[in-house]
Length: 72
Image (tube, rainbow, N blue to C red):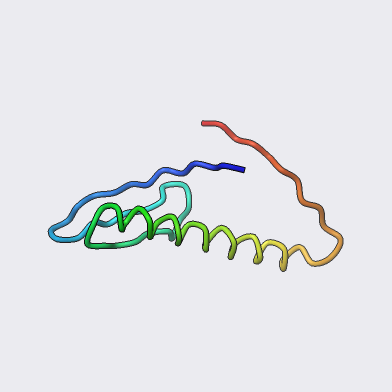
């Protein structure tokens, strides 16, 4: 399943900084723009997996998983 997110990026001095607009706490800083975008992808995937594991742990046993779609 392909999902798209919004990377908000800017150059500040010698650094590129960026955030994923839809996921609080996903932000990075790199020397180059492409390096920043790759770091944001990695951190975003880690955050999604962490949040998924946390949700499953909170649900305990006897839960179901349902796919939902949203559009802006």
